[in-house]
Length: 235
Image (cartoon, rainbow, N blue to C red):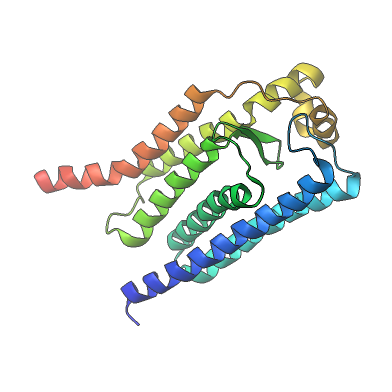
């Protein structure tokens, strides 16, 4: 089997795997919402019992381990493994929302707020924000896997890493600000305070300018190698 055929076959099965994981994730959420939100999901969140909350956090961690494991098997180098992880994660996230929409008609809008992650602190944001991030991840992964231009330069890495950190901050900003206001800066590192605050937390403001700045840096990092090649060809 040629390298090109291998990539196409791997892409097909990784796509199926990621879509199936998206369905599993949405199925778990359907069950949880039926139990905790019989009238429909809304903020503030209903706090799960201790062992259920711990189980949910471990489940999230297990999901990440599964994505890393598949990427490690599929990739022939660390860069390719990173690309497969990005692709798996992004497709899983997109189809999570697709299947939720099919199963229970949620979200009603792409601007509907959602709880995105609980690790290491609560992430929240309008649904469209993680979908945009997922599309960016798919773009980057496909460039690494299928393009002869590889984003391996230090400047490229720094742009993408800085952008990713800024996007992360945009997702945790709203909850973190409230946490610091209520419990001081030390509250960021105490999980029990996170849960206590969730009982009254209703997200109000997503800092789009910060999110867009992070996305812009990531896209700049993706485009940078292509610009460098054009400059080199022009010389």
